[in-house]
Amino acid sequence: MTNSLDKNIDHKHIWHPFDAIDTPENLYITHAQGIYLHTDDGRKIIDAIGSWWVNLHGHSHPALVSALKDQAERLEHVIFSGFTHQPAIDFTREFLKATQYPYDKIFFSDNGSTATEVAIKMAFQYWYNQGKARTKLLAFEGAYHGDTFGAMAAGDRSSFNKPFFPFLFEVTFIPLPSDDNIEELLSKLETQFATEAFAGFIFEPLIQGAAGMRIYKAKHLERIIQLCQKYQVITIADEVFTGFYRTGKLLATEHMHTAPDIVCLSKGITGGFMPLGATVCKEYIYKAFESTDVYKTFFHGHSYTGNPLALALAYASLKLLLKHNTQIQIQKICTLQANFSAYLSQKYKHIRCNTLGTILSIEIISSDQGYFSNLKETIYHYFLSQDILLRPLGNVLYFLPMYCFTETEMEFIHTSIDSFLDKLPQ
Image 1 (cartoon, rainbow, N blue to C red):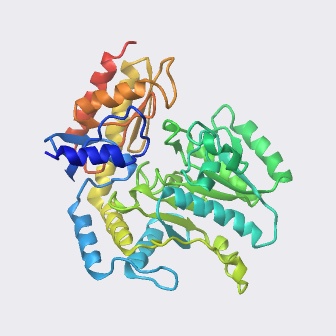
Image 2 (cartoon, rainbow, N blue to C red):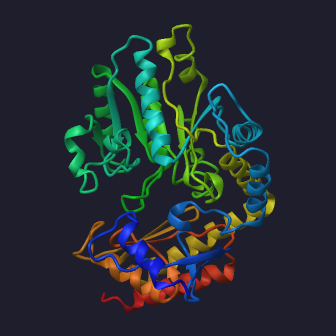
Image 3 (cartoon, rainbow, N blue to C red):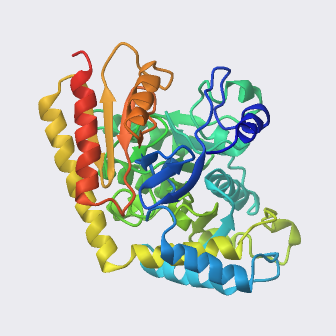
């Protein structure tokens, strides 16, 4: 058991994300293995959300532990401006080989928000370096791209960023495409592109995670991307959540045939071990910065950019992902999620159930909707009492299994969800 003094220090002096005045004492995790988080009082909690969508292979995976240990003994960090190292080279080579699209450059940063921040800055400076005044950004309604200022500006205006409204640059927001609105949407965009100076279009491909796991069709997104590229509007895919097979493919955009110009990566990139961001782009983007004019340099860099420990983990995680056994396991999870979604949709009329690859989303239909729905606390505490970590998005319950989940473990979570839904008033 952890002594009470340690817990008191945590409660009094550590500021956790989303702390509120009535936040209860934080659970103390002593260690984690596979799908389990172990607490100081002996509980084993199943991590059914990959610890905020970052863990792919399970906690303390031996291959990743070994990669981290080996790299730490050789090189823990070095400035990445003017220097390089093998882990950066290894990950870059294997990632560019693994994706079905022809990308040429990777810019490393520290997290998902900075990966999108970098992409937005690249898009604006691409036009600035050419002396062209393209200063507008396009995004989807309901978007979330991170908590730094550029990323916040590109995200939907909400209670999360309301204090900062006066400081955010203007963005044009369009509705998610659907069978009903796609033709009208494309027509309006074509008119806008012909008369207005858009630098780029940033989007979460196929699913908006933080907005409540809102899923839309690849064929509609592809038509928007193609229209953007017709008018030279730089397309930025925020794959921070969707990358590394969450949707069943390495990148969610690989469900299409048209490659976006820039892709942002983070979360699962290191298998959940360390923070790392990556912004991947086509060569033509980089060419706009390749100049003898020093003022055309991309002046963006963090102290821990290209950290060797993080990149050694990213390389080791990618090798695990590309193994045949892992690919079989991912597809099995996709099938189990789809089958369970169909079962729930048939059984319950008070939910909307969707799957995309490994992601299962269940929207509980009630008068209490949205992120601040009271259902959020009900769902969270019910499952935690069953030793399952499921952190809902308001009235939206989701299950995001790590790829080490066995069929038996998947069925246990599915049965628990079914039992919970059965108890709700219909």
